[in-house]
Image (cartoon, rainbow, N blue to C red; front, side, top):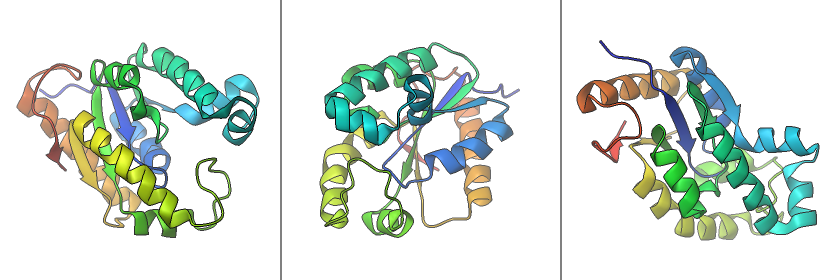
Length: 191
């Protein structure tokens, strides 16, 4: 018998679909959905952009770690993390030790397409977005890959199809590993 996962964490770059997929996947897994950035905004009453403007990236990352500490202490949650959450070793430990980590992998081209009208990303300037996305990918993609229990390439799939495939991969992962999320087991398997 496959049990529902204790927690699931979606990691990946901005524009990879963490929030969109996460909301539907959480319903399918019967988990409570949280978007880490939205939770920070609700707690502070300020947008992520404003926090970056006032406190800088370091201030935002401190708030992000605090929020992840709260969210990973819960059970029965699916959390869409911010793209930079993996930069902190402490954050990576929080995620790895308390749930299944799914990396939603996307290309810079896909990000550019998905984010072309988005003006809300503090690390994505209006000028030369491609260069910035490539720089972020070079720093973060190896961390996503190292942390992930499973990798799910985006390939411009329809959201419902992606949710179904990730759901199946999570249930298969639990059945194969025979372990609750967060314990050592197979890592980095592709969905």
